[in-house]
Amino acid sequence: MSGPSPTPLPWFAFSLALAPELAGERLRGVSLPLLPEGELAEALDVELVYDVPSAAWKGRVARLVDAPGQRVPGRLRIMPPDSWPLVTRGEKVLAEATLERPVRVRTASGALLSARAFTPPAPSRPPRSPVSVAFLVALARAAEHAQLPADAVERLQAEARLVQSVQRARSQRVRQP
Image 1 (cartoon, rainbow, N blue to C red):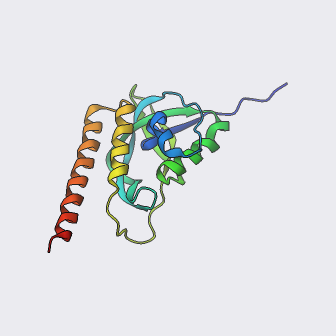
Image 2 (tube, one colour):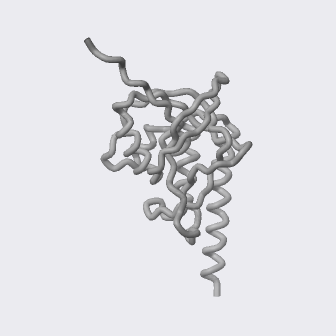
């Protein structure tokens, strides 16, 4: 006689884990479990802040912070508990997201539920590096691949272009005598 089956874990993916096919480019030998497509969703009362320095991304990456009234689009995936260690490892490699936190999520079908999300921890001191253009571009690609709403994808693409333009202008200004 077997006991009750383990309870599946709701995982809210909002970063590079949105598109596991693209994530493979960064995983360097860490494999994600076969991921269900999941459902479009948004985390409530949070936003992304790009303040975590990352040597791997050569600049700052995003973390999830509390922000009443704000929302972050993503995908809700219901994961079997035995896959959680692989999800944890994948999030760590992809975006240095080592902190697991609860989030309230509204699915595309209107359901409200609690889920877990992974985010980098807050930096111990103010970051000095610029925002990582490579991270922004990868995040926009992942959002597009995951079929997030067009306005969210366009906003991420615009952020990547804007940050790249500002950083290019700054570097050219520094080089001029």
